[in-house]
Image (cartoon, rainbow, N blue to C red; front, side):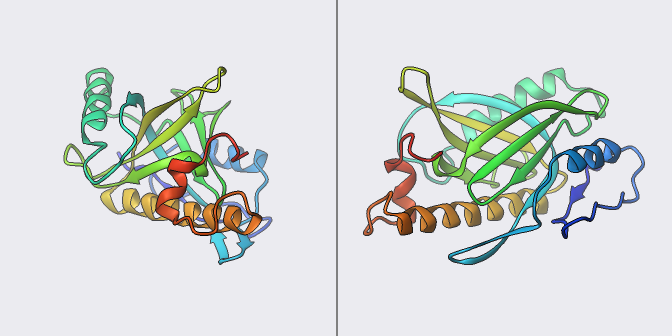
Length: 212
């Protein structure tokens, strides 16, 4: 089953349903009506287009280490994929809408009927340590490592993963996430919240809870 993609919207417009009738577009339309947002954000580095994609959220798993590099998400993604495939049916619809914005990533959850729910996970872009769409278990999986701040101000590193409609869609999400991170980095550097000589690759290791 294909899963659709909602393109960035001009102000006041809603997306038109695409061909497949088995996709939860009605839920998507209702969700977009309730979530008012501009089609793009203007910032220090120009415009940023908000990306919205219907995905299947595979969950999260804690990971160790502070240095992240190519292949570091393979093991947690395999674990999440195995858990997901054991529980899935032959046809498993999208269960979330992933929205990538300049400073935050929103994961809107859908119920088993594809209906919009009030539950939404918010990820601060500055706490995202690593993201990639290059996975051996499936080229359609996009994953990111996130620094979760606990109530006692300690933190843990969690790997989150979503299954996309295609390999291309997964790569689009990875590109959008990197653009969002660059926006956040340049904004925080301009505001003086990070060192002027810091690089964008270092900032995710330096930031704690001062990212909103």
